[in-house]
Length: 241
Image 1 (cartoon, rainbow, N blue to C red):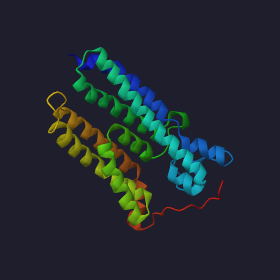
Image 2 (cartoon, rainbow, N blue to C red):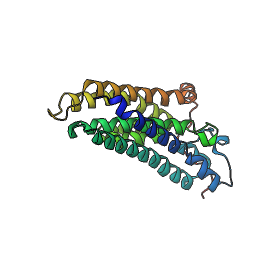
Image 3 (cartoon, helix red, strand yellow):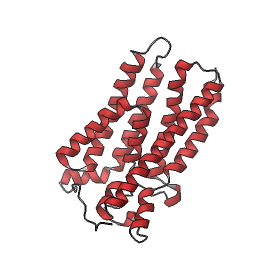
Image 4 (cartoon, rainbow, N blue to C red):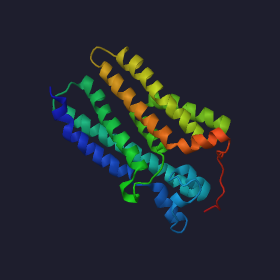
């Protein structure tokens, strides 16, 4: 079976749709709505993300940003999953393998949505750091990976109260947890009819490593401030809306 031929067009379709969804920067949109057409990229840290919205605009705008940025990641993943599932079903792929096939679509969609969030075509390719959208991607793709990773975030945040440090630690844990889950739970422990291939383990781990590298790279200025002890802890400075 020629998988490249079957999934070439679905891959392009999923990638384009997910990127365009990811490019809808809700931090910019809701800052303009709640703060008299201000641009969040000129406020606070300059990052178009929920944390900067919380500090610079207020809790209401941050809550809307959080919900909608998470939602666009979730919707993108669902689109990718079902497009690949439908393409695989039409091609006669066995039901046991359809799950793993659809996961590839989910990963493509998730990655492109995060890239769209970071480099939004609608806003001059200057967006956020992609943490929340990436969290939605992980949560929808595999809850077994999401739970340990979000626990790392929560523990580090509870200790430090620094969102950037928590995000960096969670991103670092992502490829490790992905490998452990896919290798031991999917590859080694799968049933005869629905066992993941070692290729699936390698590809999903590689994608998770790529996402981790992107997120950590986007936090490079935060890393410098953390090293100097200058990174701000979470707080709200703006007037209530």
